[in-house]
Amino acid sequence: IIFFLLQREIKKYVLAQTALRESEGKYRFLIENIPSITWITNEHGETSFISPRIKEIFGFSQEDIYEMGSSAWLDRIHPEDSERVRASFSKMISHNHKLDVECRIKNKNGEWIWIHDVGIMAFEKEGTKYAFGTFLDITDRKNAEKEKIETEKKLKAVFNHRFQLTGLLDATGKVLIVNETACNMVGVDSSELVGKYFWEIPHWSHSRELQLEVQKAIE
Image (cartoon, rainbow, N blue to C red; front, side, top):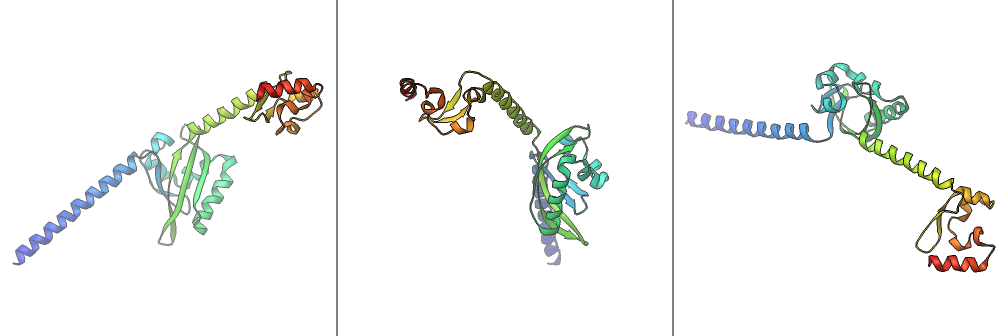
């Protein structure tokens, strides 16, 4: 009887260990393949776990990150972002505030990349606090946003330097934007015209007949 009881317990143990290994395998597969980088860092900024994919994004391996301590992250943040990120990190540790920042950080090649970093206080071990979080490389998105802003500036410059009256109207004929140069020629600021019907702006005020023609053409 004792033999069969022991055999049953051994079988239960083996099944439990198998289930545990399968669970760990699924978790490891998830961590290693999701786009975001998962991390665990203590209150001093020292990382105890980082996803293996970190090398693809950051250039440094897991082992590099562990050996570098706090210099792996906090010391590599862009000077313009450093104070803001450090303050957010401190609030997460001391007041359980959620960390949610976008910042630039220097990779192994010395290039600045953009990341979106999100984290929360997770646990305390032997008097040291630890936070858990993920970050995503958003460099492509930030570059696209920058290009969009620069393109809009160029288009606006071309738009505003036209001597001919040029504007953008809504469906009812009200002015949304109008070029600065044409406004300066009649001594008005473009902001004074926004919200008015296009045929009511000063450029047509010299002729009621012309105002009606413009109104009819728009409507």
